[in-house]
Image (cartoon, rainbow, N blue to C red; front, side):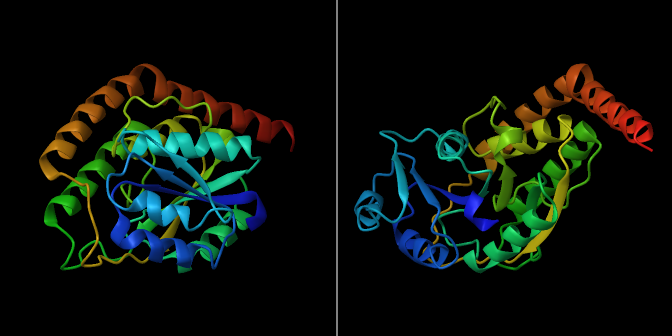
Length: 250
């Protein structure tokens, strides 16, 4: 099963943690795609040492995490993978959780596996980020009728066939929220998987509380409108069709 799953690592100026993340990920998977989103530090030099062991996409300028994920998904689809685990390059996600994602995918074919951080209230986690997650969870439930405990954790497994046609409204941090919302509207099945996160001292975070919160607020306004005119009606029709099909087979 894990042979059909790749690991996508978007990175931007994470030279301090990237090598450690790669070394650990390669212990669990040889199917690794790194998307260098226009880094200006030593990222390119680090990636050159893994030539032949990983696939690399090098962007000429920083376009944002959403754009990096899309580039990684497109390459993964082209290489025939059925699913992709996304893991951050800043060292906060533990590659040792990868087998749990592979097993969850085996037990739940076609499901979107969402990492749920078990220590959201950790002392070294910023209060702004915690508030943003709660804020995001609330609006996600309102927009989709689906409850998730952590809509901002980037450690996830995506079924590529079901997300390949999704068009992002944004290209940066908030694109991960879009992926969840649009997947829910299309009737995706979600599985929540507890994961552990770390916050290394040399971790480079690109989360900007005020700017990112403003963009998430704007995105949620747009998504609420789309939910009323498109998302929720589609989800309702999908649910109704599945109910009819299940009765017809009984």
